[in-house]
Length: 99
Image 1 (cartoon, rainbow, N blue to C red):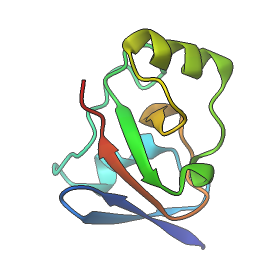
Image 2: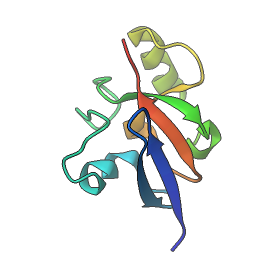
Image 3: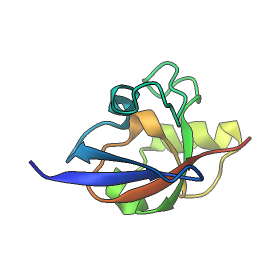
């Protein structure tokens, strides 16, 4: 099974996930060392906003609803995503977005 590396900054914590995994699965992979706060897990609360530092094309494209919600939350730019809406298809480096 092919896996991809997801690196959390600034901790440099690395997690390997199978291709097409939802980032919500990180709750189980990190064993209590959470780097991303997940709330609703459906793109409605904004708790899981991340900044993609590299590999943004490996998380799929943002849908119109996700983009509009991020802008409403004050996060403009292609490098911000809702982690709960992402599926991994390559190596990625992210950090929790700061408000």
